[in-house]
Length: 396
Length: 131
Image (cartoon, rainbow over all chains, first blue to last red; front, side):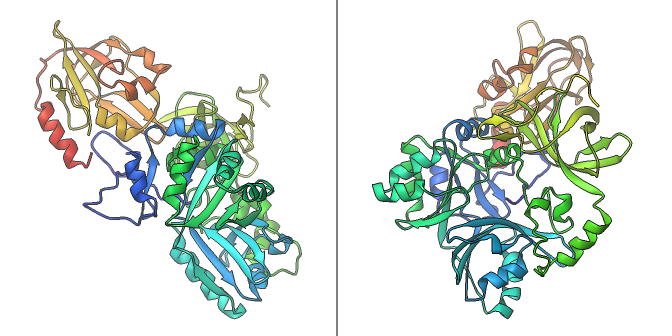
C-alpha cells in the first residue's frame, strides 16, 4: 500500500515505467521469495527500497487472472508487528483513528489510519484482535521505520511491547477461486476452519496465520507463514493454477477496487476527510481521545475544502498521478493515482479536487485537455464494473 | 536478453529503422523498449503525409505504467502508419520488429545519420543500461 515507484529519465522514455533492479549497482532489501521470483522470470524493480517483482511477463494477464481465477502476490515486504501487553487495546484506542472497540471477537480485523497531531496520515494499516493482550498489525513497507518509531514512542506509556516479525513471509492469494485453491494445501479440518473465516477475520491454522483480507477487490486470503515454507507454498499454489502476480497488477487491481495507496493518495500532508477515508475515522464515542482528534474536529467544523473522488476518462489516453484536473466553476485539482483499467478497458483515477466537484471535468494529459467524469469508487468489485461505463445522455 | 535483429539500425532512444527495397524506411520500437514499458494499452501513430524533421516526436506508445514519445532519427514524409495498433496495441509487445511497426517514411535526406547505430553497438548500449 505504499507508493515509491522510482522514475528515472532514460533517453526515449520521458517517464520510465520501472527502474530495473540492478544488483551490481545497488542491492535493495529482499523477501524470502526473491530467488523464486528470479527463477520464475520476474522483472524486478525497486519498490520503497525493496527488490520486488513487477510482473512475470504480462501485467494485464496477471490482473485478469485475479479477477477471473486466482493469483498470488508476495507481500512479505509489508511490516507485521505484534503488540503485546494488558493495555494493548487502550493503546490502540489512543493510536488509531478508527475505534479498536469495534473488535469484539478474537480474529476480527480493522482497517485504520494512524494520524499525527495535525490529523495528517502517518500510515494506513490493518490491526487484528487475537487476545486481550495480543494484537497483530500490518503496516506499509516504505513507512516501516517511521511507523515503528512512532508506535514504540506511544506504546511506552501503556507498557505495550512492540515486536517486528520480519522473519515471516506473507502471500496474498486473491481471486474468486483463491480460498478454494489455497485451502487444498491444508488438512480437511484445517481447510474447513479457513473456509469458515468471515471477511476481515483471521485465524491461526496449521502454522499459518490466515486472514480473509486483501487489496484487490476480490475475495481471498493473506497468509503469513515462515520464510522457509513460503517458496514451497508458492510453487504448490502455482501447481494448482494460481498465477504468480507482481506489484504492477496489484496496483491496477487496488485502483479498480477504489483502494488508496499510501504515499500517492494520502500522506502526512493530507487528512482522512480529504482522502475518501472519513468512513475509517470513528469520532464516536466522543470521549475517545485518539491522536489527531482535535485537528479532525476543527476540519469537520470548518468543512474540508478538498475531497478525493474517482475519475473515469471518456477520451483515449491514460490518467497518471500529478496531472491537473480542471473543474468548471470550482477551480483545479490533481490526479493522485491513475492507470489504465484492464477490466474496464479505459483509464481510471483517484483525484483530489475542490469539495463539491461532480459531473464532468477535464484533465491535462500531456498538454491536451481530455474529458473525464466524476464517479464514486470502487470502479470494479468481485469481477464486475461498479460505475456507468458511458456518459449519461443528459449530463446535469 | 533482448532480441536485436542484425539487419536493422538503431537509436540511443530505442527505436529501430529498417531500410526497404524502394528506399523508404520503416520505424518501430525495440524489443528492449517494449519490455521496459510493459503491456502497451495505447499507440498513437502520425497522419500519412505529415512531414517530419529528424529528432521530432512522431508517435506515442503508452503502457500500463507510462507514456513515451517515439522519435524519428530521419527527416521525411510519412507514407504509411500502422493504424491497426489503435485497436491492437499488444502487437508492439508481441512482435516489435514485425506487426508492431509504427510508421513508414520517405526520407528527404538519405537513410544514414550519425544518430543511427548497428545492432552490435545497440546491444552494447542495452547491456550498459542493465537490460
